[in-house]
Image (cartoon, rainbow, N blue to C red; front, side, top):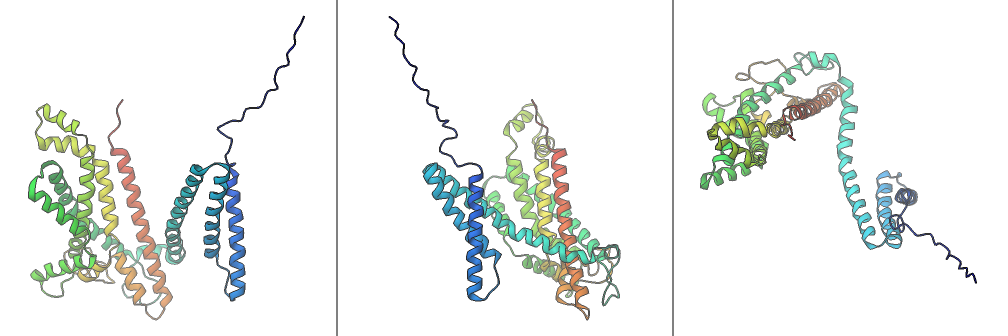
Length: 362
């Protein structure tokens, strides 16, 4: 007797990794629908109130609708944890895009307005005897380079040695006092630094003193706290094992710092110095007080007024002559040049950090 049994029908097992999930195009579809609804709402409001159609209102309404829609749909299909994750992800991405808006707007505005005078004449001429169109910013570029260079010469050694003392030697009340005053200097307004430099030089040269070196001293007061803080953090990241291995071989502490600690932290220190330079290169208030402004070329930072790029842009914009547009064009182009200089400094810092960073061993 033969007994035959039919095999039970195979039921296709659901993949737990893909079941209960929104398709990849789902959030994008919801975003598109939300933006369309936002545009319709903005158009209705504009038509009812007689105002113009607002792209900002469209994006804002669409974004809020998207957050609500993606959270509800994800709750129904994927569950509460995934819905919360999508909600938080949407908020974070929205905040990131919102933070990019002023940055992109600034870059586009400066490039669009500064391109009018971005020519050879602008970089090879000064403003001497120029009362209308023409002229250039050569004297301001030279002044910016010289003043910032002297500020770095003053600030970098002071900041690095202060950080070395705080990390390697500093103990007790003196170390705490230095840390406290560095924190205080970090928050001082730039105008205070300019007033201090003016008062200091007025003691020796009398009232009305103006010089590029005074501007460098004012900028150094703003640079030193940044250099100290960045260098201090980089030195703290150097493993103590390297210090102990060097000291165990009989190497003096100062030589250990010079040959082991500083080279290991060099990339981070250079990056911090570059950020400090970028922090002060656009300062206007202290340079207006102590460095002044001029239309002539001045290579001597110790004598006479010296023009810098931020002061040049400020002066061109607030004190236009008869041909206002020519002054405004020069101001925008000077701002564009200043942004390009900061960008080149950051690129240089990244290259130095890449080539001088300690190579990882096996």
